Length: 83
Image (cartoon, rainbow, N blue to C red; front, side, top):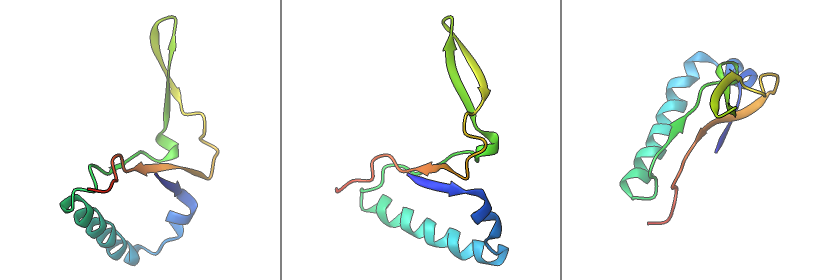
């Protein structure tokens, strides 16, 4: 899992993003090609989070419970494994 912190991301200089994204894409490519990475998925930031619960057998969607938190799960890598 990769944790997000919107304040830290907002403070990251815009001109540094292309290099940071390229490094992440190179990491993903390397481990996809080796068979160690089965997927990489980004999630919405905390401001867009929603919580889905079952109420009386039907899904009920509300704003996520952690909107005031500084850190949240930003993405995850299921299946990062040894080939």
